[in-house]
Amino acid sequence: MAIAFSLAAAGDLHLGSSFAYLTQAQADILGQAQLEVFYNLCKYCARHRLDYLFLTGDLFDKLDPTPALLKSFQQGLALCPKTFVVVVPGNHDPYFAGGLWDQIKGTDHLHIIRQIGECWQSPRHKLRVYASPFLSQSADQCLFEEFTPALDPTFFNLLLLHGDLLKPGQNSRYNPIPQAWLASSGLDLAILGHHHQASEVLHSGGRGQGSYLYPGCLMGRGFDELGPKGFYAGQVAKQSIQAGLGPQLQLDLKFIQAPGPCFYRADMKLDQLSYASDQDLNLQMGQALQAKLRNLSEHPDRDLFNLRLKGTRPGRIDLPFLRQFLLEQVFYLDLEDKTWAPADWSRYSHEPSLRAQLSDLAQALLTSPHMSEASFQALFLDQEDDLSQQLRDIRRLPEDQQQVFLRLATDKLYAGLAEED
Image (cartoon, rainbow, N blue to C red):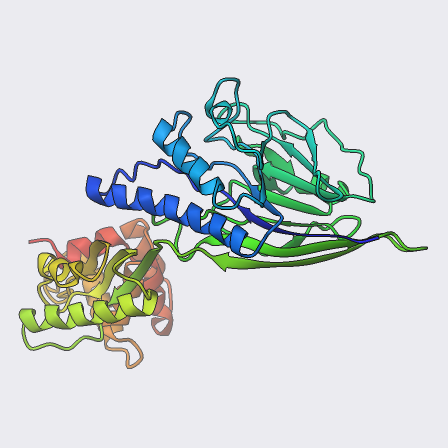
């Protein structure tokens, strides 16, 4: 006899995030976008008639969401009344008596995990869900450390847990889950929360055909959570044990991109730009940045961008002009000037100093037919080391190997050569 059902898996939405780096108006828009992303998830479950929605915790960002936010969450659940929803609380929204999860009532198709080592059995399918909630905002030990479920192979055995899946020697304050424990558990599927980057559907590496996945966060909240986010959805099945064979698992789960705001980061190097004036330079830069935005996103007016200008500065950069040039095309823009001025390597040539010796060496390297000034400076800024030690190391090398200087030179040295008056 086969067990088969459909599901969606999502989490780490952090409803109620402050978005403190934005204006209040922008923060309000992103807060509403978080709700809309959750509503779209619930509508997806209803439209595709999914049997279950598994939520991996940190649905709320704080222990005390407002009554309005709790009501909005329940309104989202009401959009998929025929999908049974199972929630395991995470470290941002842990379960405790009288806390936020006890305030959500009157939702018949919702089950909240409230006990360590809980086993919830579905009334619809031969499905057992093993789970442990956070009971505070940290968990130094695995929430399943002393719990080994006695699995019935005639059921589909699923783990729902918020925490860090770790290799030997690693540790975490947020429910460290040993990979060896998961591999030896015999579970058919583990759905995990806490990591905001989605994983693939991965084999647990142990006995049987068990797999695990992180759906990641449903919507990014900053430039450490780049690109499209979403959830997993699809069908799973488990065939009955046959003579001489174990149960056969089939997982047809696909990552579904959520239609919400995204965060993007990109660098633009200026070394290839030609220009007639500072004004012409900044116009070219604005047009190049426009093209960069279009390559990154189909919805720049909805998304958030961190763009960094890099390379040799060929003229005066007008950041206010560039921001204004791009402002109407994006929801949010963080534009950083990480460029540097061209170095005048000859200005110290006649000084009786260590700096002059290094300047002479720099000029000699720049005469190499294979070394442009732009590539020289890009490498010159890469590493940091003691200035006098650099010179000793460089002077020990044969002349044809002295380009090792490019890997040893320092930001401090460059600043002294290029910027000091």
